[in-house]
Image 1 (cartoon, rainbow, N blue to C red):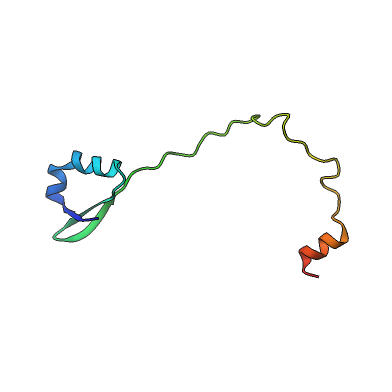
Image 2: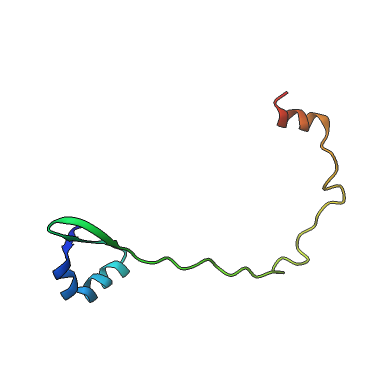
Length: 78
């Protein structure tokens, strides 16, 4: 990742954007000192679709029953 001078970045902006799209970050600086980095944006979070697994997941009737003593002891480190 090389540092590009601000003047060069202004004249080659479309080329730099193409580099970023290809996956390479671009650093822009002034007088050889890095100031900012141009990086590719990630896509936003996916939309949640409710009901996709409807009818495919079953919850046991005793789901919220107390744990057996030996399992509870394992969680508590006894």
